[in-house]
Length: 321
Image (tube, rainbow, N blue to C red; front, side):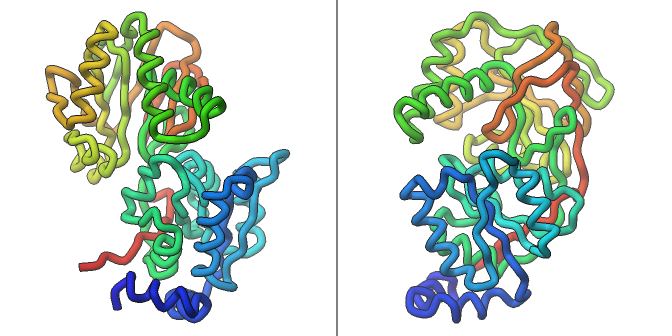
């Protein structure tokens, strides 16, 4: 039976559908940001998902005085076999980081702006459909990237992109979350750009020194495909696809961004690509602002990127068609 037809049944008999799909009959904990209940869009989406997940699922929020990690550990102690991150990529990586090597099942209910990780799994951004896919999906172990011990699911970067994230937070605080606000933060950051950074990169033992406004280390084949970038096979082979951006001026950055949006980036002209399993990046600064999955943090240099193999057990939607 097609998923869309099942969802038609769910409208009338949500608990019956939950029983049909939740064949593992396991306890499910849905972890949401404390602010989600204040957002009508998110609260409505969570409510629809919980109706589909059924009585085996419990909604929890981590306390403003605690952390995602503490909430995950409590859920594991309480016997939940599946823990669902209800939010965007930042929430997903926060929950996933606390579940590494636990052998508990991890899933995502996408509520963010871009949702690259959830979309890469093939999850719908419709909350009811996503919940159904979680119930009927299959567990699978995946490898994840780490930078100085910090896990990431989609990408990590340094240079101009962490500055964009900082500007985006200020823009969201003033105008609210939207893709338009996210794009405006890119423009403002480019206007303030001064000069590219000098970086020393050692990838699988080979060292080179470059000047670049951005290093982008990818672990999401889906994200690369969305922008027409090569490297998907590298990620499938459990390696990093690291892009070194060219550009020494504001005009060059705008051209780079325009070509990226149009999926017209050319290797050698716009970016260089390094395929590696281990990467060390050294800069002139003792601490660097590093972005990972929409979050950011200052980290001591050198920055060490490595693959943590089969560390996360996720629920993949059943393939259709």
